[in-house]
Image 1 (spheres, helix red, strand yellow):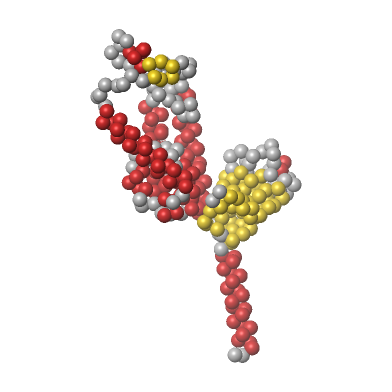
Image 2 (cartoon, helix red, strand yellow):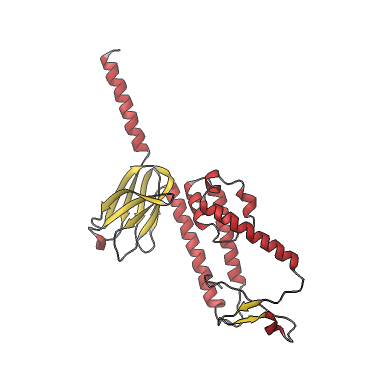
Length: 269
């Protein structure tokens, strides 16, 4: 082969490799504020139960930069090395320019997947804030609590999350949110969609644990449904003061007894 041809072919191969690297690379342009100058920030990749530090940068003029090759198998996050400010930001290492703002509530934008994630987080945060406000204004410590609007907000919250998961279960954003939030809201049709999930989701440890718990819950609910209308067995319960008593202690001459069972970890409860 002509030496000139060999050089030309090698040049083409080199250019192809370089261009492929550029086309699949990401740049994270970050901002944390001038008060954090000379502090370090780390870009960590979440790999199952471990963290891999991909890069470290020092903040200058409130800014930091990370560069790398696209990785859409795992979520990553940026953390500020400051003991007094626990600032972190989830980020998906998608090709393109990614913008990150580190603060008490951090934001990530710039590429399709990161925009998708941030829009989801924004809307979820808004729904939760509205629900908390509604609860504190019309339910908490009220003799005649008005729960209709709160119930509607919670129903819309569940509908939004179920729909988002269904639409995005095959991308890294949807998979991350599905695993992170499984069991945090009640999906009445969970098992109807479970079998159609991607295998890596179905085999996830958190998902498998929830499947086991959910089956027991559904079985208990079905059993309870069959017992509606039957005579209740006398049972010992604990009241809000920590005192134990039998249900029969409260019934006496009353025709009806209302029992409110709640959990200490449940904010609305």
